[in-house]
Image 1 (cartoon, rainbow, N blue to C red):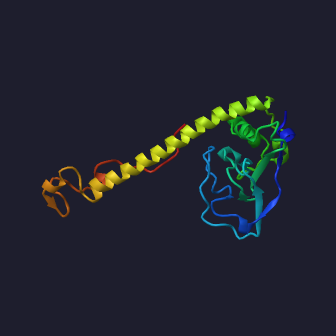
Image 2 (image 1 turned 90 degrees about the vertical axis):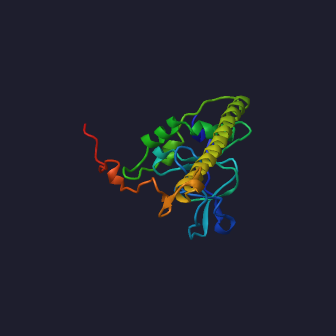
Length: 217
């Protein structure tokens, strides 16, 4: 079964006044490696954008090797370089399963194989629809998508935990080495705002610095 058998490109436009910075998707604010997107800093000055609905699949068509793909969780608009795919018959082919089928590296390699251009390759929209998909009944599709979505939820939870730990580490560093409130700081004798036993040195005094260069073959 080919992608074009179960999905089509959305070409409908949505008025710019119905799109916000949180619902505008472009190749610039999509994260690589299937890692979601960041809200846009500003909306481009166009009267309309390509429309997308909840459960559509959004794929960056520029430099497919960056593997930028989203499963829409709301309605919004996107730039012309973002492909919007929608399941033709959601009652027979799950849109969430379609998203996971297109999230595999094999799909992005397929896009690159048919891409046009070298400096900034773009996927060939016609050949993309020739991508082969597995043929499962709807129940099996939904079961697979449910299992994979649970893993995505766990990954997202761990990302938030990591972000909190990184922020805690930054705050601890500032507390100890910027505000100088390290353990026992009240009892330390200071000179020019730092403990008397500390020294200020240039980085070149404690390590070697070398310019980056190509690794020899």
